[in-house]
Length: 238
Length: 218
Image (cartoon, rainbow over all chains, first blue to last red; front, top):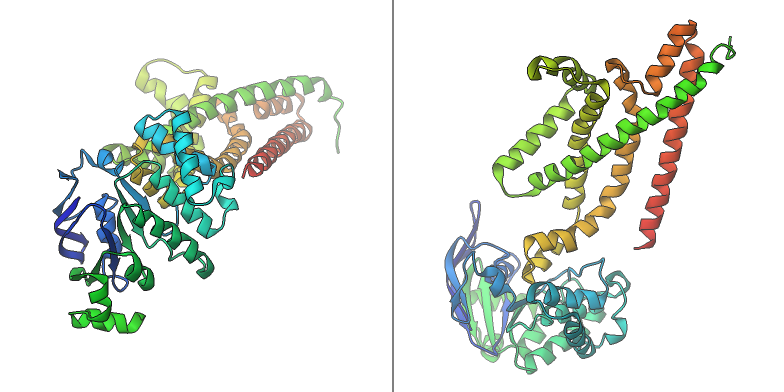
């Protein structure tokens, strides 16, 4: 589904990604973990080109991403941000239908129907006419997930989706994500929620200092990490 | 000290200047707004030469006195273009070009003040640049822009008094002429002052109303 080959990213003299290669299969749920500054967010943001890779190649569904086709590819890659980034001047429903109508040319009625179903799925149907600033953090993030899903993407990217939330709201967002994983969505999740990663992910990618240090099943990674760096990291966070 | 009796017959003459002043301000604002938007788009865009041009333009018009700019247009330009230019068009052009520099900065700052995440969210959804600007960024920027724009408009209204130096018959010039005719400057200048002050008050009031209405939509 997604193939990353020798991905490098440099900011000035600072090399954030030092050659990452991996492959993600359809319906796979990947948790990307690692200490802050390890390059995990940059890795994720390179996949949909919010960051321009310095070198390396990424393909989605067999298509190599280029400057020219990125807009088309992005329709297929849903993204959820740490700080939600809902459109504050649009209602919840308008947030969901804007891109399907504008980008995909779907009729307003059809887009509305899909949006309402999605809102029911994330438990926020009754908030459809509210503006985002009337919602709690957890509700905002659930709307953001629904907004990304409204484009009917084949892959969902999550950039620390619970890091900006109050502790009591983390659960509701993780529950939505778990449902999504169980429905067979391909997901790449940058997260600090180790419990969630262990429970939901099929594979853990452990990044440190811009390199992919470990690529393992959660069971193995959390009980018997191979590298010393992963061991050290797990000791700190668990 | 005050003797308005000799000046009173000339009050209507001074008041007619309001129309002239408003004409200058309104047309200059339109030029300033249109040109300012274009310059702002150049500044935030990615085309380097346009960006340099817009920044150079702003720097020149903000870095030299407005009186100088007016005088160059009115007195010096005929030498280049070969024909004279009337005071009114010169005043409108001068204020318009000058105002564009300030307006472009207001708009640029207003757009930049919109959270970068908004752009990223739109990009990630595959929304093309022009639609993102029109539907996502500008509607949010307008809330930052309008109050400052109203201030610029009020400033322009007051500062338009210096068109006197190129002889446009605005409120200020008329007051000055009446002063010269009657050998009494205090009274006509006071009248001019009151007119400007009332105009500023009215515009400020309108601006506050507008801000209030915008806040209600939050």
